Image 1: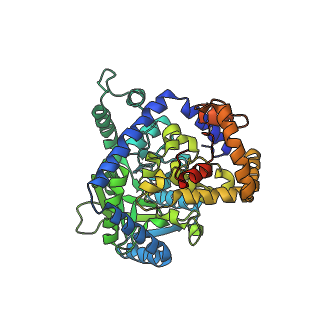
Image 2 (image 1 turned 90 degrees about the vertical axis):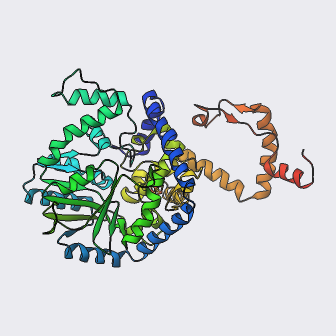
Image 3 (image 1 turned 180 degrees about the vertical axis):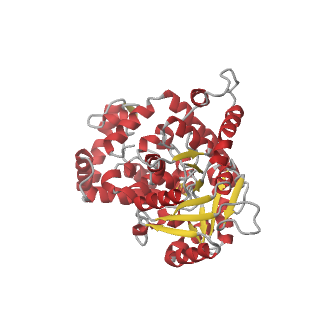
Length: 473
Ligand code: SF4
């Protein structure tokens, strides 16, 4: 995927013109939003829990070095090993070395956005190791050679019919006339196909929703149980996680879990929440012989102490994109890199640079819904504004936008002139627009797919002055 302003515009244009994508994305609006609202309404202390979750993460980030060191100590005590990886390349190399040492030919994988971030599958394949995705959504997009379009629902851009066609095209050993039009039939078939892969895998790779400093535990939250099979059945378990996944204690995890599932899928808790500490102990009936944690930085430590630190509170629930009108219109692939939606618009420039991703913070209406639903109270619009400022300061924004802002700044610095000009312009624009503009000179994009309401004839200040005087003119 290419992340550039031009690619984004082209992707977005293609996405809004795609009726199949529109149909698939309607489920995001209809499903996730209502379920989250109901789950939040049923829990009287939901807002208090959001504050508590935010405070836990803020405290952790303020003492991240201490908690990371403590976490490593605990992992080592439990018989595991932490691999510190400053860059994506370091992380890829570490995973490959572990796989090679295990003589791995096939690895099973649970869902992991960090694995996407470091392009792990491509790296493993290039080195003769076959990765098999076991999360249903990830499995589907792996068959299609695609990347996830949503951080918790990777195949949300696809309809049932498309998935059925993919299964028929790839599962050729199964009877062609089998019924496959119902979601349950698709799930059962994927389960059947994947069962053997779990047993054949030499290494299982999972992500982590949390890393617990107190105990050296990694926590995964899933609804399919695939993560458990991935980490328990192979001889080697590798956890790939970024360093901000640390939380101090198990009690802190339980607090954040209460807002995570409700914000993500509207569940009180996910079907499986699995805690793993080290490899199999003598008294354990099953589990891996080796337990490795790939701890990735990849630019995150440089966000500490700066205006983007709050973004490191993100627990990847997906609520911000579920409520984002831009995401609803274009889906996740248009964003061009791993993290879509409002959280991606803030995180992506932090990780790959404003030069590559400066256009993403501009892909926002600033309606504020993302911040209003974020369980970790991350001020996403404020941080997008910071990125826009940086883009402007570095002369990376388009010339037209810069000229428009310069013109606006000229008037904004001269309030009397500003009020005089807007006072004159409002009735003129009202007369010209007669209710709505169907086309705008120099800003055709605004009216390409919708009308622009014309001013009503008087400015807000004029209306306000009239109101203060007791009139309703
Ligand atoms: S920014 Fe907030 S709402 Fe978006 S994924 Fe992260 S925690 Fe969830």
